[in-house]
Image (cartoon, rainbow, N blue to C red):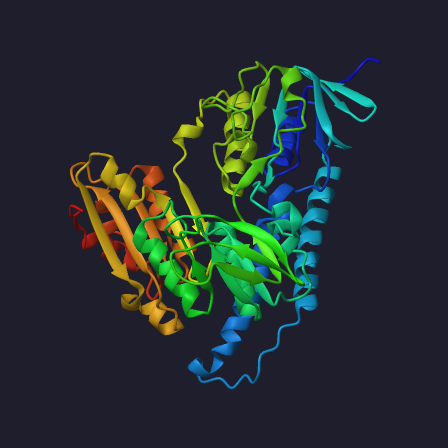
Length: 461
């Protein structure tokens, strides 16, 4: 059987895949876009869109309970989880359908439904069909990891995909994993009215962040009634009546938490284990990621890996940037590299965290002379006026070159305001550019120049 030949094959319709297919098609190429399940990948179906829609509903519930703080008599607050779920499902369906409509109208793009597997370096099998191309782009994303913890096979656990499909309120939700996904969902379900406990093996939540960020996030969650168990040395599971006993062995507190529902939020696993990559001559790294160079090319000529499966970024925005890098290099003769990308992401708890560039710990380890500025949100007019004063603004700069090194904005609108710092970092602008900027009052961003102006040499530990 002769394979169907295309100028390019894109495997996976997540954030990078459809845009890349469209860009290649607009350049006159015939492109096959292969998707085994739903268009839109993690972001639209089980990640950003549904989780942020859920968080938005939870925010409304929390604000309604605080109505009296603002002089508003709102009455008792009731949460209808079926209605919450229906809203989330509608938003997901609209996003998926919008993408389908767009792709369906693109000339030069052939959408193929099914599970793609390599049968040779430049040949793909999807069911009974075969496709061939000199250029293949792998954009298969990742899924929630389910570690082989003691007893995990004996109980029913949930991943982030499963819990977003719940239309009932857990009586007691135990979240195993104190990272970004786990904390966002923990706060949301606490605001809906569930008892929530977060279990984290490490000494603190979101361990990649500086301790002051971790501590402030923990304080915000605990203030809302989320229980946090850190240093859980031996996490294990067993059935306990109609519930699930989660063993924690923390330094303090009960040795077990009995849950009605357990969410495993313990990292992500690339969807690379069933692609037949060995037949293409591609060896994955121990965690399942596909190794790529700075231009996202694999070791096999003519094959690229984009998005979460390449291990070079775990976010929607980094996946989309992967597409931009590859497309610009192939079609416009550019020389863009993934190493030109600055670290930037957000934690969408309330208050949110916006992060750009280095952490304080990374700046200390860089060997530079570092300046640090920090201002609590209690001294930000916009935060005071909104009645949301948890958190702080923290900025870092090189004392000698005046280069902006990083920022952490933990506070109301911090996930948006951080871009004022990020954009200047991309522009290579010195601290003085920020100091001379005139920001609008009253906003959160207006206090960023003030925080830079207050910088002092980083104290020794």
